[in-house]
Every structure is written in C-alpha cells, then in structure tokens.
Length: 265
Image (cartoon, rainbow, N blue to C red; front, side, top):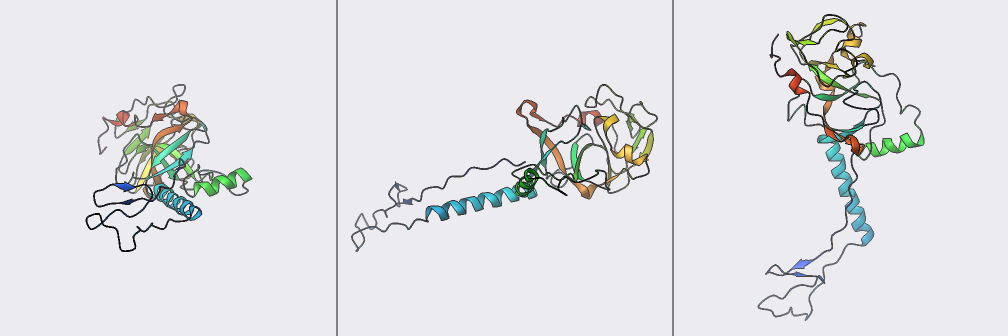
C-alpha cells in the first residue's frame, strides 16, 4: 500500500556565472558582457513534453520499487486475530529495516511469510479484476498485496526464550516472568491452550493479540504442526496504522510488557 507519488517536470533553465537564472533559457553574457561571435545566445534544446513525462514517471516508478524492496511495504489486515490492536481492513506500513539495520524486540508487531500453510487458500489463485489490478500495483508498492501469503502477529519469544502457558486461561510467562499484556483482547485471557516451549536458534514464537481467535504459534504447536517461525521468513516490523485515518496510530507500545524479562530463562 505505497502512497502514489505525484511529480511535475521541472522547467529547464541556464545560469550565468553570477548565479542568475534566465527564465528564457538563453545563455548569459560572457567575456565581460560581450556576446558570442554569432551575436546570439544558444538555447538549450528541451526534451519533448511526452518524453519528459515518460522519464519522470519512470524515475518515480524506480523510486517506488526501491522503497518497497528495501524500506517499507504496506499490508492490510484481513482478519480479527490481532484485535483490538489491529482491526479488519486496517492498512499498516511495515519497515523492512527490521530485522537487519534495527533489531526486533519482544512485543513488536511483525509481518512474516506463511511458514507452513498456516493460511488456507490464496486470493490470487482465481483473481477478480480488482485483485488483478491490486496485484499489478502491489509490485511497485502502490497498493496492498492481495495475496494471503503473509501473517501479522506479536513477537513473544526470541531464540533461547522459555515460553509457558500452564493452562487455558492462565497468564503468559517468558523466562519465568509473568506478563501483563495490555494489548490483548480484554474479554479473554492470555492463553487459549497450555504449552511449554523453548525457542530454538533461528526461530521466533508469535501470538495474536486476540488469543482465542488466532491460529498462532501456540495454536499450531499444540496440534503438532510446528509453531515456530523462521527468522528468515520475517518481512519486517509493523510501524503504524495509516488507514483509515481515524485509526492512525504507531505500533510501538508492546515492548513495555517485556521490560522485566531477562535474556536467559
């Protein structure tokens, strides 16, 4: 969901040695103000309008692709698994600088590729005309990615962490510290199932904020389907909700819940 960029071709001007700009594009005086032997200045040949517009659009397109590839990418929220933090049809911006330039931390909201068929179906298998247009625009970051091959969850456990829910309805514990999680659905407890895991190297443990309506690490692990997510599958950290405008907010308040969690259990 990259915002489109509007560019206008800049007029071509020439400058004299003093820095003045001639709006007509004629060459300024040289050699003490004497004109050239031709008696007239030379105009800089301008690019045809259609070509100038085409070049401007091409440059804007390249910039959009680079931004999507290396910096930010938009996504939309198709389900209620992250309520109340993220509502259905919210649009979010995801920073691709994390992990990488900036480290991820427990409590971050992250987007990652489907690790093992967690999501049934694909909206792009038999796409409608609208989905086809979105697929094309999403390639350059001008629209949300309509494919359902990414998920959004909260990062709960990093490599080496001991993550425990003693029973359904219990409090979530990480490295022996019971968490107070203000971001989860207040109508349900923190644990929908009991589990006791240690996160392997190169993996993370993720959970939805709407714990009783989220097919997350805990849900898949207790079904013997593998609940860990490869760090290499992480697309980036969700930074903010940017649409609808009434829901605009930064997604940076989850780390406080893990402030007392030690690095080792």
